[in-house]
Length: 394
Image (cartoon, rainbow, N blue to C red; front, side, top):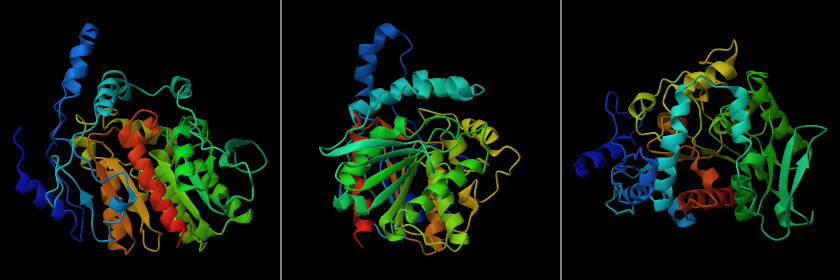
């Protein structure tokens, strides 16, 4: 497929204008040039195919603090077709990422069309093989009671300077599965690279505990950190997927209650619209390597219970975002949840909130959890750690 460079640059510029976010209603974004190989004996051929350049995917940003500083509250840095709006040429997605995408599309995505079995989903996701990557002198300290459950990733020496700052991390998993333990590949790197103690929350899961139980637990965890002596200006909240949506909802609830807000928030592929009204739900239905758009509806049914999907604390994309702290949002350009991030960023900037949106090229949903072997995941986490360190140093 021939890429029209001028058209893509114009589209990227339009997305930075005030007003409703510019979307591509009725248009299907081009998918990766990787083809699926159905025969298992053809895996070597598949790997060669997957390692070929895939110029039609998107990626935004670079995994370094210098790249992060190029942003401001009025700019969305969108990179399409292998080049940026200012003409800089980008390398294609890594071969590791293309192999991962092939595997996810073959073995994970088909399950997103089936009715979710909560027990089976938990059994599968609890086997996430990635452990913590701890820097010397740090450890994992589980917390079971009293108060919020979860685990600390922190220096062994309590007098360490990192113990004066805190990241509150809210894990993803569609509100029904996963835990602080399954996300250690993310949390240990954010803590170590950001030189900041981190508390990863284990909130109550749906459907046994529907909305607003998970949000209540997130609020309780933040308030417990403040009560323990952490100043709000020394706390950053972060989360991925469903956890990213919970993190944003927590900010809105705190603001509405008149409480002090944390210094900033980091959102990885946040799920912010349980009504599934974003154009990317349809436009990226084929391109997303992990989920079909219908997956969002199944998540909503488990989590919402009798609540409305339009409730601003369940779907924060519909909320007034004025008065919130700075946001860093990372999302993949092929995700069905792309518009969940794009619309939050647009709404935040219209409200005067500093928001940095990074749209990454050719990565799957929640790619940060694959940090042990995925270069793009480590780049995203290093950039997030640099943002956190910057916000907590103000």
